[in-house]
Image 1 (cartoon, rainbow, N blue to C red):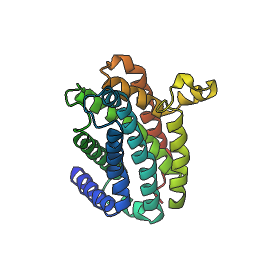
Image 2 (image 1 turned 120 degrees about the horizontal axis):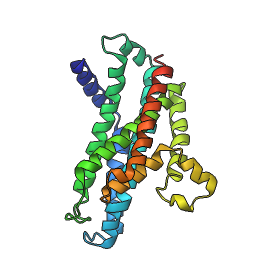
Image 3 (image 1 turned 90 degrees about the vertical axis):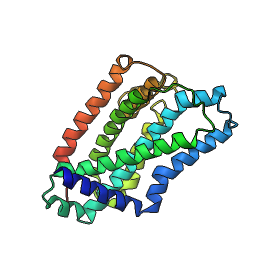
Image 4 (image 1 turned 60 degrees about the vertical axis):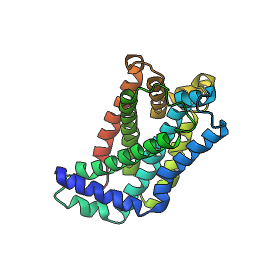
Length: 247
């Protein structure tokens, strides 16, 4: 099963790279935006603005990257595969359905890691190298966040009827979630109704967890965020297993 999973993952990587627009949107654009922000700050690696960006705004950018990869790309790919009969043929292979879906998760994890590594390398001239970053803790927080958003993406992918509806439905889900999650406006500054809505969306807890861990906070201080994201993973995985359509 492991060998089949790795072979399928490698196949999905090659399929993804055959579509240049997908690779550009997932890898190149976040790096370019990262560099443009660095230039806008004046290119001063030791400036307070650059340090503030690393501590606060970089997790925001990472959260947006996670959401784009999970909600838009995943939903589109799964719907295209279903509409083209690819999922039906894959299900007929010796691979278990869980392995087929896991291959898509591994591809998303891989390209997210590549994008983040390129962002760090590209930003060395703009941001303070000496800034202490809890790499292990942040990586774990990012993994939990990514799994939560991916699990939500699988629920959407289970419901999208055809490929042409994938992008609009993904956008309808993605943009409101970003707007009320505290990425650009503090949750406390939102109207009461939007504050209540934000507490129901996983992106809010993604942002809180990533910002807190990257700023040096403890996991215990963000146990509520972790619990919320773990709940999202459990609930969305259960829903996907029940309603996912292979054809």
